[in-house]
Length: 354
Image 1 (tube, rainbow, N blue to C red):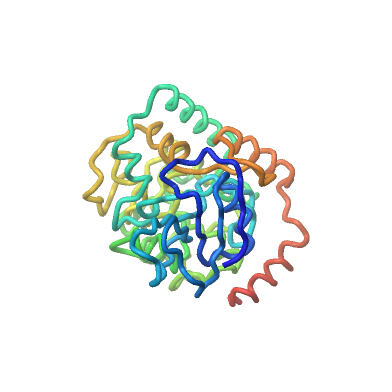
Image 2 (cartoon, rainbow, N blue to C red):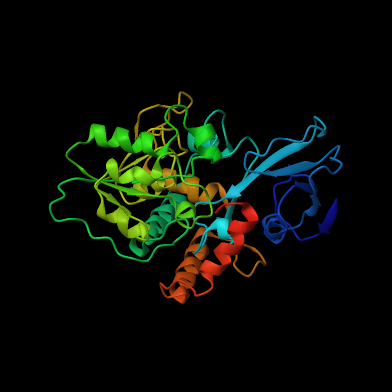
């Protein structure tokens, strides 16, 4: 074990004073400290002795180490839904993380804190008004999770119906734990094509795959066989606004489409499915409540995430995170920095993707 930190805190009392953080890469350590102000944070390397008491934080679906005592509380952490201008795979510092004591939002096999919030929380009128205002700002500004891709996309004038199919990284846990049926991009694309033979179908590969920081899916190079257009560097916010429908496995693009009032069909069980707002091919039997779009927004963008100031000093609000994203994107100027490709080349060598 190494690295300890003490900060002031307004964290929930049920969180132990000491937080053990297991096998996180070093670049995430400052973000963990920022996420848990006032807690003593102990970073544990893989294979280190495990705590007998307290709280243990894991990233995503990382398995609980075998030596953890039964009484240790386990938290799981992941990127939030309004993250950055740039990819997490490029180690760009996030503006939001989620912390979950039950599971994690993309694991549909069991409840998560987000699912419990959406299933049970009574959202007051003030929170719903804030959620509506944030949703309107996201749509007006064309913001998404990563805010990459700068080229405009123009819908063909002859396209009476346009459907977007966003690709995912097929090795991601969100498919392993959130898609009990079809789990491949081309399987999804073929199903969409078969069900909508007269629609203009657009396929957009995942940005991590386009950056060659993650491997493409099975047969993804042949996507053009099953769609009318493969889009690469288009701005996702503009693309979502221009289409009529979005069909997904578990992609966050489905949630981003809902924010824009688009029809969304889910072939998996993402967190935003099952609440009466999506067409669900595989309904999740635990989800029965019917939510409004503002209630879904309040749960997913207000009650669940932690928002992080970009200077690394404190927690912040969804509204302030939006301000930061807009300023960040404006400073980028819609340009690809000269150093991006050499940096990606360096990252590919580290992670073993060519």
